[in-house]
Amino acid sequence: MADRIALVVVDVQRAFDDAAYWGPRNNPDFDRNVGALIEAWREHGQPLVFVRHDSVEEGSPLRAGQPGNELKDVVGGRPDLVVTKHVNSAFHGEPDLAAWLRENGIEDVVICGIQTNMCCETTARVAANLGFGMRFAIDATHTFDLVAPDGATLSADELARVTAANLHAEFGRVQKTAELIAELAPARV
Image 1 (tube, rainbow, N blue to C red):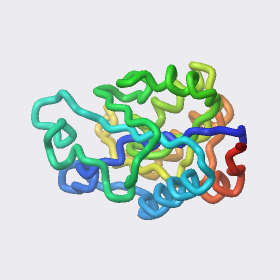
Image 2: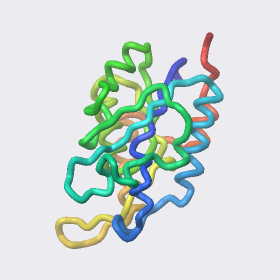
Image 3: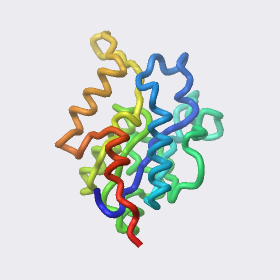
C-alpha cells in the first residue's frame, strides 16, 4: 500500500439499523470489520474520513436533525475530515474530498460503509475516475435486498458480489478487512 492511504467510511448511520424500513441485509460482521479498520488506521496514524448522508428527501430517516442521521457508535472519535453529502458519491459533498486528499498528499483510499452497491460503489468508482488508487473493503460494507425492474428480488449477498465484480481490476482492488490491515504500513515520520 501507499505511504498514506485514507480510510473513507461512508454513511455508517443509525437509520440503516431499521430493518423494517430497509429490509433484509447481509454481512453480520460489518460493525466488527469497520471498527477494526478504524482502529488500525488510528494505530498507524493514517488519515480517517467520515462521510454522512444528509438526505434532502422529505420523510427520509437520513435527514439532518433526525436520530437516524447520526453516525453509529462504531464510527467513534474524531476523524481527520467529515464530509456531508446529499448524493451517492462522497466526492460530491462538502468539503471537497478530492481537494482535501490532494492538499494532504494522499493518493490512495480504502472505501467501507453502507450501502455496498449504492454510496460505497459510487464513491469507489469516482475515486478511481479522479485518479486515486482505490481499495474496496467488501466485508466492511453491507447492503439490503433490492427489487429489480422485473419484480424479482436480488439478495443483498448477490448485490455485494456484483459490486465486487464491477469494481475489481477495473476500478481498483476488492479486498477483505484482514488483508487491508495486514498491508497497512506504519505512517512515515
